[in-house]
Image 1 (cartoon, helix red, strand yellow):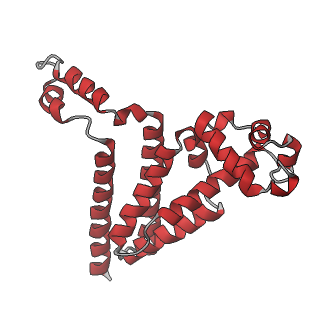
Image 2: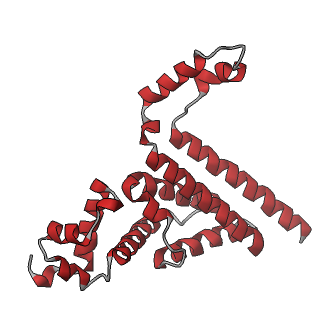
Image 3: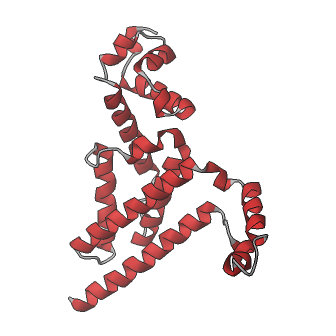
Amino acid sequence: MAEARLDRTTILDAAERIADGDGASGLTMRRVGAEIGADPTAVYRHFRDKNELLAALADRLFGQMLEATDWSGSWQDRLRSTMRRGHELYRTHPGFANVLAESSDVSPNLIRIAENALNLLLDAGLSPADAALFFHVLTNTVVGTGLFHAANDDMFDATASDTLRREYAALPPDAFPACVATAPHLYHDPNEVFDLNIEILIAAIEARGQATTTTR
């Protein structure tokens, strides 16, 4: 590849392909160089080391999440879109999920996401202190669930869920009556469960916002 074509975007494109195929552990400067047909030393001219490359790739992915989020409409709709896009980011890049979760909170696009999320919480009527508290609840829900689903993608397999339901249904009913009684309803589509998390959070924010308005 000609030197003139080797830029940060080209390198990040290659790094994303490698990370999606082999995970963050398979991403090395040498691999990136081989992917784009350049000597690894050329990659170092754009990124100091692997950690800097990982941070830049994570920030770019967060930027893509930001662009995919619908920031229009009510604060409830904005919250739904924010959380769903965040969850989707982890599921789309499972081999890179830990890097995303460990990203610095002051990376450029995470700051932009925080600004938008905090604004919607303030629009919900929360005090600045409550907005900050719920922002962390929102973040923990997205990151925690995202990591869990990235590590357990078989949860989205209908056959695997059916097998688990049958195993619960076959438990001794005298020892595990609740498990047996609810067995047909366990292991919902994880997306439905995540959406319920969002609605529970919205209800809690609405209640806190109404209480704040009442005491003003």
